[in-house]
Image (cartoon, rainbow, N blue to C red; front, side, top):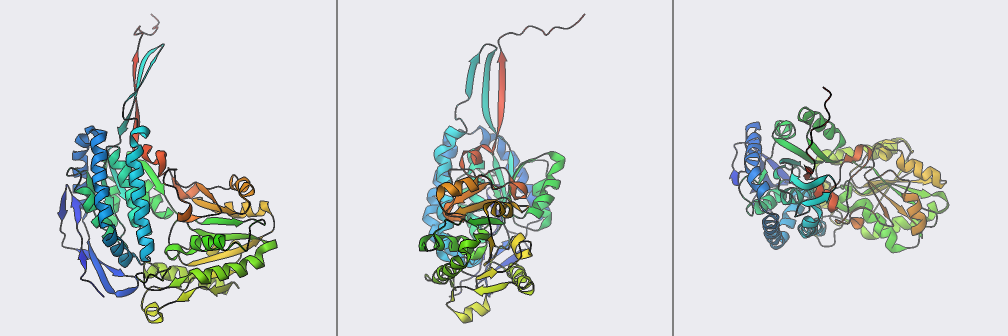
Length: 494
């Protein structure tokens, strides 16, 4: 049943700021339904948000860590209470199945709690003081300043809190800009969090290019935390160059999965785990297994069993149907892009196999739904293999020996995550040679994610790390204070 559209606003200096201009967010399962409206903020409003954050920074940075943690814990408690309704809102505006939306909130809250639990140890609540022969050295972890956090639509709640939580705990202030393709649940979430913090500590703006340019070039922004496309990141780096800003960039990925000859092709659980790593969130997660290489000796049997596993798990339909595992693609443009890759693969002679079951044909025709597909016979350099599809399709290709598999996996401008499937010890040896920020063994994607350890990419998949202790440390500066024992003047020739 359709609901009245939700209207959300920018948050500047603790206040919701109505705007004259706004944009609509449709329901991907039923594009005729408007889920809500987000504001189209102006460049001037973006500057106001940055200035509010800058003004709040000195006081917030001087606030004790115990108080910062306590405020964050109160926000977490509110989010836990609101998770059911926020997950429903995310599912409606994004298109991901409801269980998937609930899972995203679960991962995000897990990270926020971990950050609260460990921040004292990681950031050294007390200064490190070392007495030595030359005197005394004091090492502190200082907040950086105003953080611009820019997030995509793929995993919007998680990819916002992954930045906001450590930034605020470390004593920074934040201006967040969400994607217009999934702005509503994130905005309601930031409203909840911002109320637990002093005005100006957490701000939020929406908008078009002029807002993004301001958030990445304004001289009072000290750090940019961005998740999104590699091409966009190149523009961000140029915009930030004049003021040499700190950056954490988590970018594109075309993550390879290598299936070793000792993989048990009859293991239904492993096959289902691989299927999920290909098609969760309709294939729209940066860390999914997007190209699969299978040893030729087991290739035919692997394909037969993979199709069976995929047909058992994949059920396409209304995200609120508890039987559904795969919802629609998030937006029309992305659907058309994925379809263009599939059409191109067909023209090049590849075989495209439809997978799973469509539970509601009428709804399927109405929304941005795609039938998940397996692509066989594609060339190693075909676009569907070398480009990030970001949709419900996966190419599976044979390889002849281990060296070739490693070469194929590394033959990419990206290096976010990867996976190796087979005997664990053999798989670890292969994993050590893959160029990626994370390599998982006999699992992939969200199933293998652990918020206690750093996450990020190599090559054009990014700079820096999020999650884990490293993700917390990326929001502070190390400040060394030297107190020498001997203060004699240096030798100066007469």
